[in-house]
Length: 232
Ligand code: PGA
Image 1 (cartoon, rainbow, N blue to C red):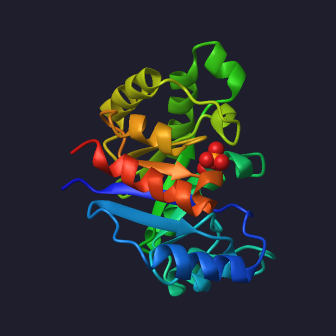
Image 2 (image 1 turned 90 degrees about the vertical axis):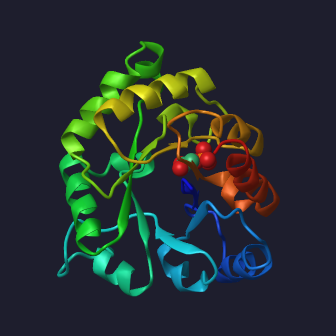
Image 3 (image 1 turned 90 degrees about the horizontal axis):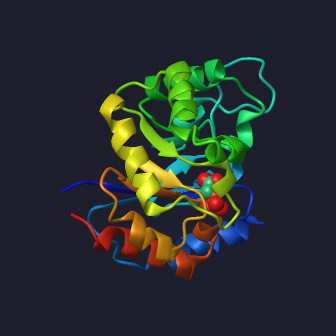
């Protein structure tokens, strides 16, 4: 059975620890999830230990092992907290870091046995010019993902906007990318329950990275089931 990755990127949406705890108790623990689904919750760092019921992910990690790096959180610390996946190179962080730093973060995570979820994606003007694939390939060339990495295609203009590429565009993109990169590929950017159903039918898409909708329990539950029910 092919594993399907459903990643909840909570960003900084939960407004309190009790929010995170009640999500864990009232939403996560009560459901029987599809067997093939690997559901990964990425809360803000301070709430990592509040999530007990599903697979734990983090939203970022440091490119450094330890030492004088104020505000940074190392992959080792994450591992100690039970983190199994970490989002790396999210577009909301990319203005603060180069592809070189992203590569170092990815390797740091791998060295601790944490699976990096490497985000790539183009801005709107690049999409409009029809250059998305070349743009993403350049990002990948500089980040050099290796075995053990999961890729997430997240067009920047689709994040939080309610806009998405068409399923055909995503399908062609996946086909082309997988010729060079033999690793799981997720799609992220305004994923809703309806769109999850369409994404599930796209060959080459192995999961979804969900932002805002993952903080809405009913919608997120539908996303999980819609993505898991329509393909093998
Ligand atoms: P969104 O965010 O689902 O709110 O568009 C996705 C992401 O940023 O990973």
